[in-house]
Structures are given as C-alpha cells and as structure tokens.
Amino acid sequence: MTDSSVQSDAPTDDESPATAADVVDESTETPEAVGDSPEADSPEAEATDTDVAEEATDADDAADADEVEAPAPRVVSPYDKPGRWYVLHTQSGYENKVKKNIEARTASMNMEERIYEVVIPLEDVVEFKNGKKVIVQKKVFPGYLLCRMRLDDDSWFVVRNTPGVTGFVGAGNKPSPLPRRDVESFLSDKAEGEDAGRKGKPRLEYEINQTVRVKEGPFADFQGEIVEINEDQLKLKVLVNIFGRETPVELEFAQVGKV
Image 1 (spheres, rainbow, N blue to C red):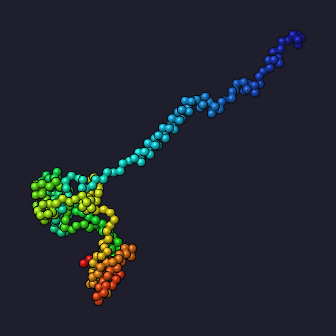
Image 2 (cartoon, rainbow, N blue to C red):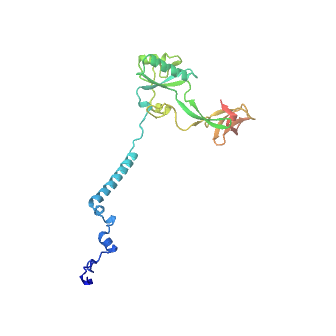
Image 3 (cartoon, rainbow, N blue to C red):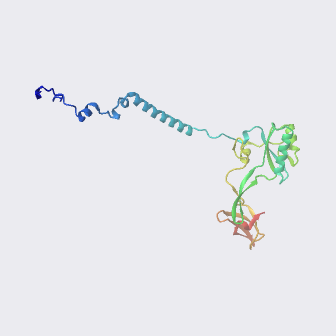
C-alpha cells in the first residue's frame, strides 16, 4: 500500500484546530461598566434617589420646625387661680404649725372646695456666718400667712377658729382680699403644681440706711447707719456718732448686729 492511498486523518489548513486564545476571544465578552448599566441610567433610579433625598430634607425641616415652635410651659399667676388671697395674722413663730392646723381642719371638715391653699411667703437672704457667705430662707412677713380661699360664712368660720389664728387682715371686721400686684409681689409666678414661694436674687441680710449695733471692737455698743456694703470683702461702712460727730467706720459683717 502506497502513501498516496492512505487517507490521512490530519486536518487541513482550513480545518486547523482553534487555539486557546481564539477560544477565549470568542467565548469571553467584555462586561459592561457598572456605571453604564441600563438600570443606573434609568429615569426610575434617578427619581428614586431624588425622592429619598427630598424625604430626608423634609424630615429634617419638620424636626427643626418642631424644635423651634415647641411651646413654652404655661405659667399661671397665683392671682388667677380659683378663690382670692387673704392675709391671716398668727402667733409669731408658729406660722408652720398654724399652716398645718388649717390644712388639717380643711380636710376634716370637707372644705377643700372652698379653702385651697395656705402659704408662708419666703425669700432667700444672704447671711455671713464664720466669715462665709450662706443663703438661708426667711419669712417675708413673720407672724402672717396667706390663704387662698372662696370666702363665705363657713370657710371663714373654719379658718378663723383654727388654733393660732388671731384674725384676718382687713378694714374693720371684714377681710380684704389682696390685689393682683401684691399677690404677684409676695408670691412668685409659678407653673401649675409647683410650690409657691419667693424667688429671685437673694437679698442681703443688711441694707443701705439700716441701723445696726456694733457688737465688738472699740465701738462696741455704738449704733450707726449703714452707708456702704462691700459684699466681696464682707465689710460694711457704718456712720457712728462719736462725740456728736458722725464718723464712717469700716466693720466686718460679724462685728455688727440688727437693732
């Protein structure tokens, strides 16, 4: 058998096998860039992003509006509460006890709808003890109470006959209610439910033009009028009458006392 009679199984040039590179080139497609995808460029996607941004902005604006427009707590003047305010005279030094007695009688005699509250007006006072400044609470009107009530014969009887109460303040035998100016001056404006009391800047124990007595030092037992107060140095300047002549004397707070 000759070579020419043998049919060759080898492929011809036209049928040459594909190379690995050709296979890769034909089967592999270049992926499109993420940014160029139809979904990224679609109007629906853009609209969604815009809506989210607008909703977030609206939420922030609403939060800011709520913060700015939040109403302040409503403050009720003590004068505008039910009833009228009356001044009661009591035994000095027994104000707290008398207050409790009135409250107890009001409850026991079912007068809560006519007798509303009893207040001892207080104020903060700056005192100097052992060379130190301290703030203490003192009664604005020792020997007096304020009572908010709806006055009639029954409520008057309950209050007037409470042990320690010596009477109502008023013209003749008729109790006189306090005007608005005095009520708001004696009692601080306060929110509903808070305790009544005097608020504001603490008052100094001593005041200009007040007469004091010197307790110690070369001018002991002399009296004089305060003409200057140095709160920072805890000192007073007092005009003391020495041999018929008023002389300014500088004294410490601890060296004087009230007359």
